Length: 592
Image (cartoon, rainbow, N blue to C red):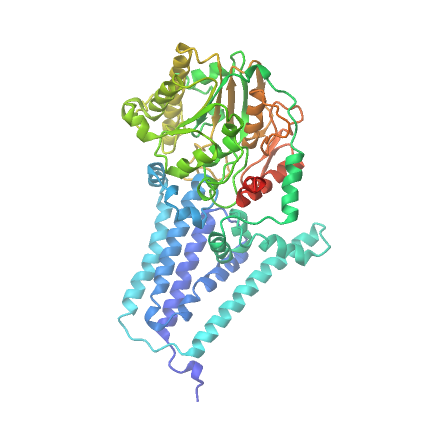
């Protein structure tokens, strides 16, 4: 007599589950390949199986009439993985749950970038769930035997056991690796700690590689649902205090600049190695090239990008506050209303204005502008109302026209920040003329060079208009890239193969210095303070080191944790300290 477990076997249900496993596994393999997760075939199979078993446990838990929810789960998984795959292709990192579901994360530039990044491989994220959907529609018309409770319990138990067994094997292999390289004390504890320490506070791709999609996703969800600000314990608060106390004191301050205006031009996607590049018609950046050799210019074209999930908004945050981005999420969106030290707060006695080329709600700019201490924010609506039409002049031309108009009305000295936009991928902004470049790798690079040449031309006009109004010589003008942009294969835009440096150029500083040591974006803030002659004792100087400081380490750590140039203990601490400061709203607690 057959046992109840094998009586009335639900063959169709088991077949559907098996196909769902194959489809989900194919989706994960596609995704893991897209984000460069490289494992031996056996380990990759184990890695995928543990996630498939965990994700599809829903099939055995759900009532019979709701088993179609598995199809919805696979579709949701496919869309999230596809979105993260394209984001990784563009930025080299993953999206957090908070970023995906925040409306401020989306604008016309995001839409344009997505439409240009889609490749044939991305169809797999639609094909696999579509096949499962077809099978479900066929099978639901045919009545199958009810899945007995014994089948459910058996399937769920095996899934749970195999999931944890696979996780245990991953920790065991890491333990063996640690032992082999000399960590003989508590290798099990250390291996587990390295693998799962960040659970609940994920920091990106490294956690996915260590934990797998299921644990990583639960960690992301917990992070999104926990209170927005963390509470620091005594040791964390002390580590922040000690780090700030050990910040290098200013060694070179240019006192003659204290009464000058500060104009910051934050340039979208400016790669330093394209400055001075010769193409068909000569130098594609004649203005920038001439500024580099001008008297009174301080420059460094060897800056490492340190932006995170927030992209351009992270770059602007670093330059305004001296803090690095948080490890998971976009700080300007998640913590836009924090209390921040900033350049605008440092120069609180000045009129401070931001002129941006997009709607103020994009990337939470209307909130961060206030938090950073600006007294006035002008956005795309203000540009149009003043008659500066980007369709006629191009976005950068309209932006510089508005900035010139505003600068002419401000009491002096003032602080004026102008983030450009015409070089934003996919480089299809209106008003950018084609130069007919042929000395380029592909259409992507040609469009980038057109946009760069256009920016360079509009920059020349802006500087000329400042001279006409007597503002040029009385201003320190900073030109800095917000982040890098890979211009190689359009399907691997920023995933680590190419490390384009970005630019820092300061005009009218009173000294001429061309620096070439490796530096990070964190070093922008203290460098600007030194150039502007700010040497107030105890003043916040950011987490970086001034590039004018002889003790600058000559190194930087990028978003993915890779060291460029020389190492230094302080470099290892910068992102951890910034993450704690922002996540806890540390500076607001100092005033309590």
